[in-house]
Amino acid sequence: MPATLEKHVCTYDELSDRCKSTARDWMREGEAEDFSQDDSIYEPTRVAAGILGIKFDESRRGNGNPAICWSGFSSQGDGLSFAGSYSHSPNSPAKIRSEFPTDTALHAIADGLDAIQNGFRLLTGHRINARITHNGREVHKMSMSVTVEDAETGDELEDVEPEDKILDLMRDFADWIYRGLEQEYNYRLSDENVEERIQDGEYQFQAATGHVI
Image 1 (cartoon, helix red, strand yellow):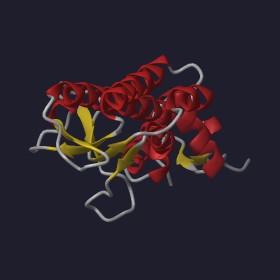
Image 2 (cartoon, rainbow, N blue to C red):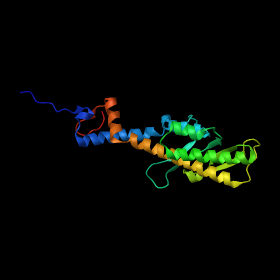
Image 3 (cartoon, rainbow, N blue to C red):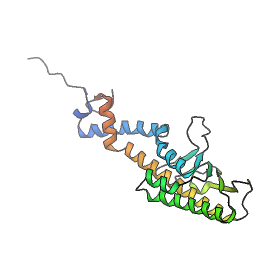
Image 4 (cartoon, rainbow, N blue to C red):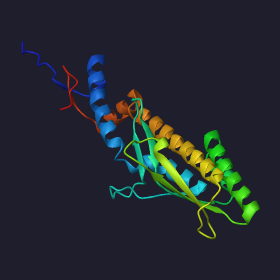
């Protein structure tokens, strides 16, 4: 009677539960490494920023990504900051509600910026521009600062109240970006997503260990 050969190679679905966990950890590691290099993670941010009147500087890495710096997502002190400019965007509260109908945090940011612009216009007949910068080596919203000027004259405002309010709203937007990245990161590292990625890739594994061949 011929000897039965042990099966050493198998698909993900044929692995034991223990080996499936090993396979998922392997794919999860790759997903984590690829995450920060994926330009698509910034797409919702670009859409929201465009509606709000925020234009990001380009990343110093020269990869075409916006100048958004972040660290995350499991350590104390993790956070996000960005650099760029802000100018009045007509009808932004209505537009942001149309594009993000259930996102009350974005609604509040759009409403706040619109109120500042309308208040300044009533006083002066002009609008406000702002410059957003990132200061120091730490990466979080408190490392951001703004300078505010009259959009018509280019003169920096003497009244610090609009500057303080715009800074608070830019920091709120940094929080919004960070939460979105964190949600996307957690999804990509979830069992559901890594299993789908493994199955789509048709990888083969060592039956006894779950290590990819």
